[in-house]
Image 1 (cartoon, rainbow, N blue to C red):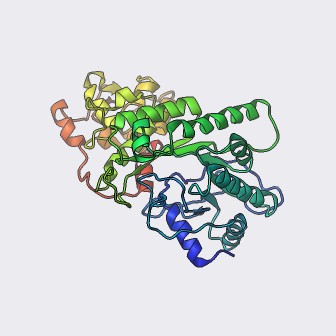
Image 2 (cartoon, rainbow, N blue to C red):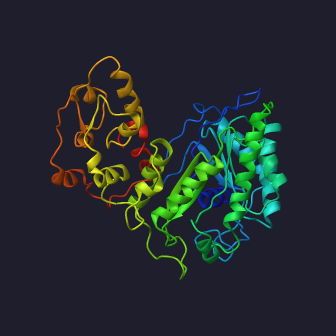
Image 3 (tube, rainbow, N blue to C red):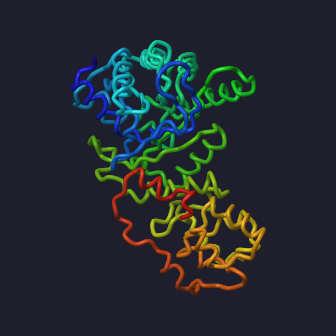
Length: 411
């Protein structure tokens, strides 16, 4: 069994990766323990964004790379340790039987070499599936520069894999993570996407990344504006079929002259999650969302900001507006937009009907009419009414994600 000291080092070292939520897997129990259904991995988040229903751990924090922002970088003065595949497997089964966890989030520093590390990660998840008969959720982090055959084999046993791009530009990677390149991350992501599509087309038996891929971008460690970050995000969604891009506000855990001395504000991360949601579910394009300076407004959420710059399009009549315009009304979420379309087939909607649908009328009333009636403010006053107060307030990653959920109807 793994020692308490080793466990503490490896779990503490893993906490900086925020891309660990579990969802979207269809892996069934086939005579072992656990399952990977979307509803089977109940998870909650601690204030710093950790998903506490998954065992979140590194196989090793003894890193070969020298990424300047990373607390496990080769020249960092921190305790080092490495677990064996057997230790990780025994720990997962023990924690699962005690009802501590529902699944596993397994990553690693680049220990000895990329191929060696990927081989150890593969051995761990393969043992869990074949020897320990564990059918719970497994999210596995891929290792840049590892042999593609190892990556392909690992994808057969994991529910989700992710490669963290970390920094939005090649220039920043060369400066802050010289042993990584954008291509070393994008290449295996494209490979896995091709293989997943091929697997689906050939209708093979078994599983191949049923929960897809994710990645993480660090916000504030390098100078790229929000627009550049979101263009990369948009490209990843369109070209690699990524499930999620996670944004992590930079925190100065190690000192380096090339890094900022202060943490990135949580509101910027929050705005990026909101903008991300607009790209995926609301039909927006990056160029519509960002301001003239290439960044997102901190004062207004991205949807409100867009609407305020296009007041000539509003107000829209709630009983006749097409879906694409309903989705662009601040305060009307994706689910609410479809509710409106369905309800107005049978009746002419009023503001009271919209309130009963739990639409956020505080924002929406300024951009809609119902039966020709308008209850919003004057155009000159709307900006002041919609401005968000207290933008310096601290929020966790989970709060940031949850606050902008399209399904709440708040966007």
